[in-house]
Image (tube, rainbow, N blue to C red; front, side, top):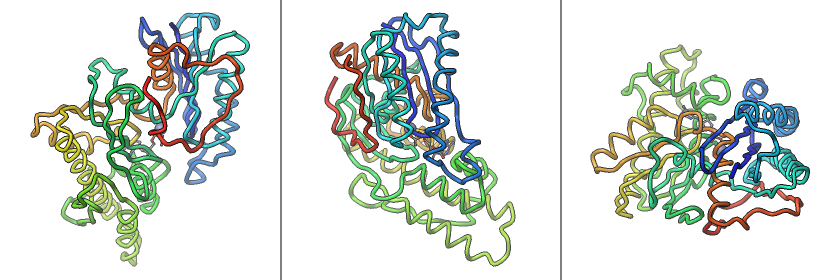
Length: 342
Ligand code: KG4
Ligand code: ZN
């Protein structure tokens, strides 16, 4: 079965073709980052309009790369939510109209389920059950995953998401959007002893997170400088920020492993691309004889492959999961725990 995946929840248009027998056949991605950069963040209306421009050319490119005709597609999976309403509507309408034209079933996929299952696309996939740390621009959650759709929320952020904290702190340092990769690179040159920033909720007994205070701590340090920040100051603050956020994320992941007795940790979402986080998690997990699994770098941030793959897994478990009435609705807010087992 060949499943077409369509992702358009935010500022990346992703198209992919996944074959349940042959694996990932092709994937194509267009990032709108350059367009939104001048505004310092994603402009929803511009995002929607750009998805319209990109979706069909990306589909043509993916079909060409896979060497198959449109008619070879057996089912279409699209991101139904959560995300920006207008952006989601573009992907949903492309998927459903294509389904109607080809007479193929369509299936709405949960964006976070896509992220969560993306490490299973790699050459060394984890087995169920595992602990998953989902760290993206909009979400920070720790979950116990027992199978497709079998998710138990263990803890989550009570305010900002980890990616949001990266982006907002980077903005305070005058770095571009999205700030995550930039602040991470800058931190490499920073002195770890220059600024010791707070580690919010590190010792709370639960598995929740809070990152808005950390961003405020960065703001306070920046404001204390009466003169312009020099590059070394910026690098030192970046280092203080990255060390603090990585410490908290690592500690909570280890607590989750300890409490559940599980030995596998999966990290998904854009912040999972962060090198300092990876190094810290790998070292801490090794001490506990646990293994950490990551998606391939290119599938850490938003992409169509994870949507095609999550759709394929659901369809393999239940061919009736897809529908043929092509009346679609999107779910900009959609808690992951509303999903049912596949
Ligand atoms: O998963 P994703 O592509 O989109 C959402 O679903 O939100 O995650 C985007 C987030 C952004 O906040 C971005 O700054 C962050 O992931 N990010 C990183 C890195 N690469 C992306 N944060 C820290 N270090 C990175 N290397
Ligand atoms: Zn995402």
